[in-house]
Amino acid sequence: MSLIKKIIVSDSAKNSLISREIAVALFKKIIGSESNIEFDFTNIEFISRSFADQFYKLKIEYEQNQNSKIQIVNANENVINMLDIVSQTQNSTNREFQPVPIIKFSNSEMLSDYLFSI
View 1 (cartoon, rainbow, N blue to C red):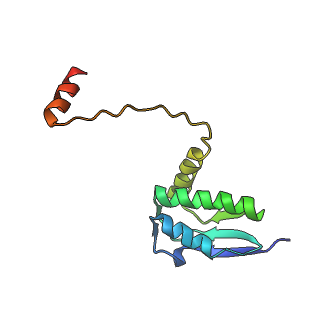
View 2 (view 1 turned 90 degrees about the horizontal axis):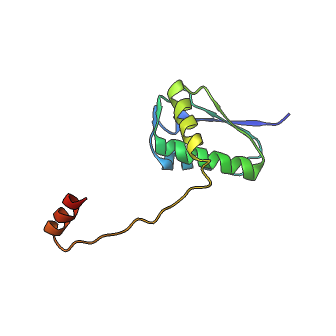
View 3 (view 1 turned 135 degrees about the vertical axis):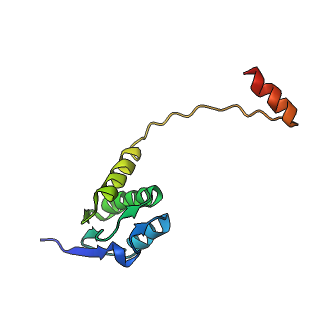
């Protein structure tokens, strides 16, 4: 049976998690841990997309490097939905980039003429 280290997320923030820095601070609490991790989201009402993005990236990195599992418990529907949305955007490995032309104008009149010609 493996050990589980429980992190109470609300100890790091009131009821909203809005920055990448908070996600980094949460993961600093588990550095060197050799157990599975449980993040308890009790009393957390909202997470921002930036927090969710950073949390998800750190979660994947931790699970791969430590060969451990991170579980999210007691999360409300808003938190789960945001983490789910972010997880779907992280798997885009074959992105296509197209060059965008850069057009410079020496004055606003030239810009206006260009925009009206399109």
